Image 1: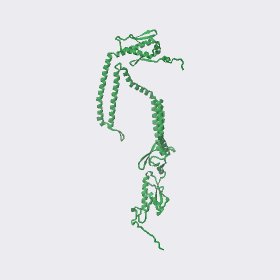
Image 2 (image 1 turned 180 degrees about the vertical axis):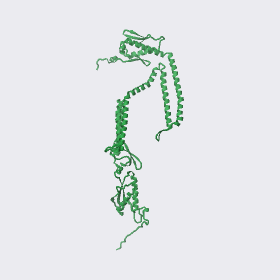
Image 3 (image 1 turned 60 degrees about the horizontal axis):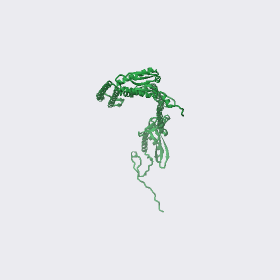
Image 4 (image 1 turned 30 degrees about the horizontal axis):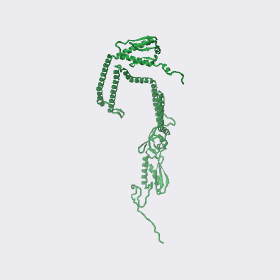
Length: 529
């Protein structure tokens, strides 16, 4: 909608500050228009006139004066009109026009004298002399570095190499003498580089400041380092209260974790006891509580981090949250599985277990995985989520409650009395190392097959971690007992012709007069009718 308002005129009516800058210094600021000229156009014109006076100085010293013209003031440098001040300028500056004109005239005179003097032959010659002196000092210091640092290198490589001991922690060598020497040499090289860069940094702005054409660039070079350092220092000073708060939270968290750790150690050692809380729960519970304490500390520290309320910081936090959400699903499943397994008390470290198809001793249980060392001395790492979803057999817990029942089977022919077989099997179990006397071993007859009877020997042991060895010893004793009794073990199937074949009992257990029998044939002839 057109309301009949000239927006261009409205924008032009808004005062805009326009500084008059000479050699990097702001002489004065204009805010008012003068006729058709804006404040910016006036400032550029004034700068051009002043620069022309500096580059083309007259032989006679310039006289700067302010002359009243009606309600305005004209400021001259010699015969050159430099600028005109109006009541609008005085109103914008908050001064009366007479004092404003006097101040501007003084500033202009000082600036012209300084800049004209800087471009004089004497000043340029002095600047050249200072440049030569600064360059000589720079070359002298660099040559000194070239002589001094090789001496330091030789001292470290020859003298200190023989005197520097190795850096050790107990029996672990953290840094050998040769490595310590390399570190010291690297520090010396870095020191030389830093000192050389600092020398060049101070030399270059210093030389540029000797000449009027490069004086402004000299200030810029200094500002490139000084301004960031000043900003960083100011930011650190402004951040000190938050930093102190973060430090307090960290200290309180540290000692809270130490206190919780001492408490759960006391629970583990039995110094502090609770009903229905088992000592083996103390370590995993401590890890859970420690995680919660650290998480709470992070939540408390988060608002005090620099720029924590910025959109960029929030975006990074959201991105990290998404990564944790989608990338740690399996890890969290393992963590929850580890927690559930711990409080289920399915097994403890050192127990002989069977997890799915893995049989061995538990050597480590963490929140993420369970490690089992098999009887073949192979360490298997099982994620806790798989452990939780598998069937678990714990022989060690059964052994603590009365013994693990071991069982093995043999098949004996019908010609051997079953009572004798029972006696031989029980005697073999009683003579086996690792088999306990109570409860007593017993025998079950599991089946009556076509050619033999199946017997199952059951015996108890309190050493489940030695089950493989105990089984081997038990089988050896069974063979010995049966051989000594002259009873053949027909397991699983054995066929022999008793006429003409030697018995299967080992030779050392055969009677001295034993000889294999020969074939015996018998028959009856049918009478002819």
